[in-house]
Length: 343
Image 1: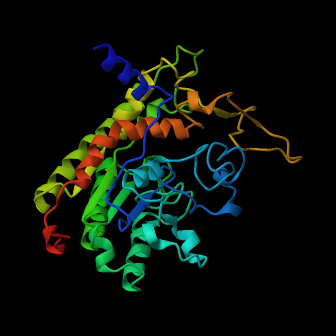
Image 2: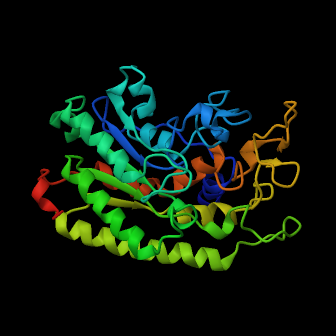
């Protein structure tokens, strides 16, 4: 019993360590669609996005890399689980870098299922780019046979939609169409994240002295409703395919579990990197180049990196909790047929 208890403490603390997995193998390809929770470098460098500014990337790779974190994001851990390198961002491929061996990442920070005020390609546009590469035979049907898609819309449609906030039913309906389309293009296994607990984001938590801060329950109930409808929709999709083609990665529950395990997290509902004046954010500098932010002493002890994005250690904690769901992607599947799901 003592051994089991100590393992649990190590597994869900902010100082989590995970060993590499042996996944599909070198022929596996990972295709990624979504927003900043999955982006590894598609967001443009010259558009003022903080992911290209210091101190982003200080943990990995040691400088800003287009990831909205101090280091790796969930995409990187999913790729490692599959036994491959993180797939190249689509932006780099368009620059002429022939690096599509491990698939491709189309995710773009600030985007959604629909258009958002941040601009950038929504998920339909991302899938369009993927389809074009298939038509150009950059990826063949054989390439797709052992491929996996990771789909990660984390909620920008509810805060940053053009024309106002989209309702949950519209978002879920469009997500279902997107999932069906990715499958119809030949990807036999697809993981899909829930939305996180919006009320636990540092920017949404009522201001109270640490450690008395608590999540905003109203915002969290909104997240839960989205996730309930998403799970029903994915269950129906799996009924249509007659298997477990579509797998839910419940990052809502993973966030909540990790945030409630406070033994080694320092102020779990606070961010590691924060602005030093009203209106400033992590990575901001004034007109003279002086920093307008501060960074915590040890990012490994903070679940959140900035006001909405986990740190590398936060993502590692989340990944370790959702990893059993990814095991389903390694199970034998029925032969792919585009007729399995009605589009």
